Image (cartoon, rainbow, N blue to C red; front, side, top):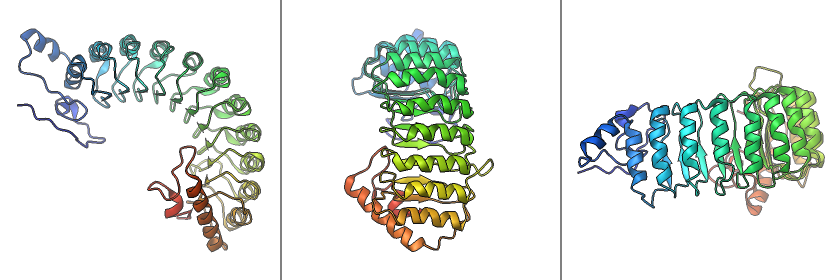
Length: 405
């Protein structure tokens, strides 16, 4: 008899190939009734792939999600897996994160993607696709009518992949979310994406964190915000865009009506950049979440920058979450932020993260009261922009609306 295990929690465990048999990720064991030839062929594959292929070949209609994360598949076994994928046409989610898949494996996978007409989510993080690998995968996904989410984190892409990714965004009419974090795209790679993003009326979430964009990359993507496309969620954290990059984004943000989350953490933004964003908050009526946290190493926001942000908080009526943690804000800057919220009866700010600053707020009781009142407003109106509704288990507003730790 075969033991059927329904759930195994083994996060970050390097189980290896033998341990993979019987886990929830690979639910079917090698059958004793396999012919000698079948057993010989399957012996050349990893147990994870053996189990997955057998399930795929069975055409089990109940199989919608296939999670093979961290199974060390590699290119050779990927070729075997792709044949099974081509047979099973009802898969909706495929996770191949951390599997040492390279250019050859990407080519094999691309051949099966056309058959997966219902695939809506594809995760390929932490592989070795490189420019050639992502090119064939992008081409294979041009005409997918189901794909909504594609994640390519840390795949050694570089600037040359920008054109292939732009072509994917331009040709695919269903893609809604793309994660390109940690890929060294640089300003050149982002420039290739800009026109495709501007012309797309569906695409809404883009993660470009840790891509060495610097000032040039920030300036390149600023026109996308100015065009007020469908883009509602943008993460540009850890790109060293500095104040000049922040100013370029702030200038486009003023008239933007769709972006609800902007991640600018760990970007060496100081007072000038923060003040420019504060000015943008005066006229922007869409942004709900703004991350200006620092890595605590490069340039950071001081009291002058906090006061600049406070000018925007005095009149803004949409921002719900502001993170300025690990900067260099002291009492004066903290009081300015507090006054901006307290003195704005229309404020919706329910979460203000000041962790890692030197703030002792004289107006802390009034600030907490204002944040709690705003949290109640958010709860009544419901959540937006991927933020949890106030009162939910994930909400920081109910638990600690003003974090000073």
